Length: 405
Image 1: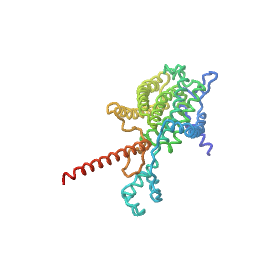
Image 2 (image 1 turned 90 degrees about the vertical axis):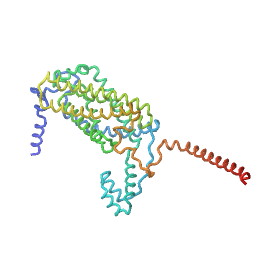
Image 3 (image 1 turned 90 degrees about the horizontal axis):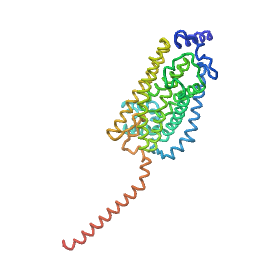
Image 4 (image 1 turned 60 degrees about the vertical axis):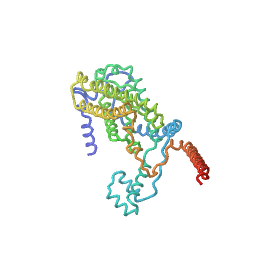
């Protein structure tokens, strides 16, 4: 019974009427007789799951062996945060509720712990600060993504620059689905999909940002898009989609790295370059060339079918996310150009470091620690000046005492 059910499910899942244009069969996919090439089979994608675990292992080693020493070399500094005193009941409440709690719950904790509501607020504030990611952690994460996106961009450029569909997008559909897959295209697909799987697996430990939900939607849509395009042999246009995305991602990650290191001018320059590349590739090239080719030009080679609509729907989801992120970027550019400042990263951590209370919850930052010796000298100098002034005033008073008498 289980074997029969699996067979029916397998037959239903791989219906050619959904995946392929009218008149095409699975035997036609990738079968053009070119030597040294391969046909795309869905089972090839099973390799991406162990490779994703491999990416996680490589990332673990990279962040500790390469990224961490690099962060110290560039001068990345972390805030020294005060730790919350041990309170088992408050700890259990915090782990369960995080930031979502009501005043009535705090009043109940007041009776259980013997602390005032203000003291409970202060404890929760300290506990939240402990969970905030350090600059070093964010730097290591950004450096790992920077290395991958840079390598993926260069590898994609090398593998695509000599292909006819890189310059003429109509070639993406000529002969579809009888289009063989080269080894370079195969590994380009497999490694990109493996990397996005690793991002999904690490979502619980990575830095959580304001656009966390949008990032999850982006990763899931990308995984579906890469997997579907490989199984249906939309690999030519799929490589263009991945290349367009990689062209700006490594610039963003490099800007983050220098931001955490405190290199403001370098960070600003890279961010402006990233903004230009992002807006051109995601709002101009991607919709006008890639999406237009998949929606309009492809119909010159085959009639619409369910897979055609599904594939374009995923591309439109990505384009909607591009518009959302472009809005955030333009808002930052407006603050930078017209207001002369950027208050904070529009895609910053969910709990910003600007939410400080004047209760000594956080100690001095690295810069404040560097200013310590200078401040002590200034204070000493000021004290000497005050003492000299007092001594001088005392002498003047003593000198005038006889005259007053």
